[in-house]
Length: 178
Image 1: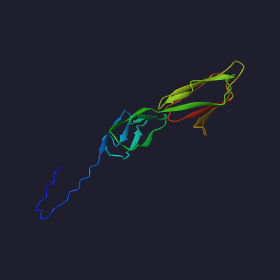
Image 2 (image 1 turned 60 degrees about the horizontal axis):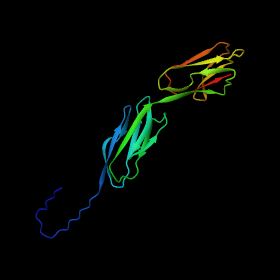
Image 3 (image 1 turned 120 degrees about the vertical axis):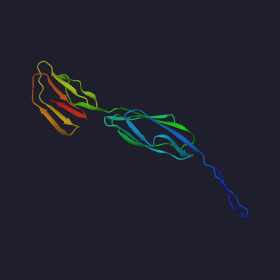
Image 4 (image 1 turned 90 degrees about the vertical axis):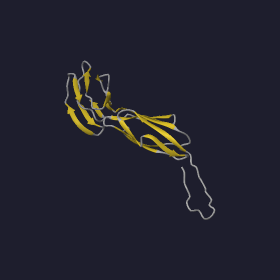
């Protein structure tokens, strides 16, 4: 910068302080956002906080800051991330993944039958599970729970194969078969 002194009538002392600054280059994958984004200027030795939010149906997959990567579980939809003190330019990258849920089976005796197609389910998809009694056994009852506590539905005793379809899965479910 240039500064012009006008109408000087006495001697002046000029002190100049320089401060190093660095650039964090932020990139994000599809299905989410980071704030601030783009080219972020940071003073020498300072940290930077980023707010990270996944779009509906997605979760944070991983964050790479200055070459170090952190993986996130499939239910992490937002976070604040603070960098280490900054002493050089570096990249800050965030990727997102489809959010997943789990259909679990609680305390089932697999010698008496099987429960097929439980496990991880992508956000918003449908999943049909099949409960098959072995010959000589029956399905006593099937209780379907939101999470682990709120009963959604009970299916009565059956000697037949029982199928149950979860539609538009947006949370975890647990299935208890007796």
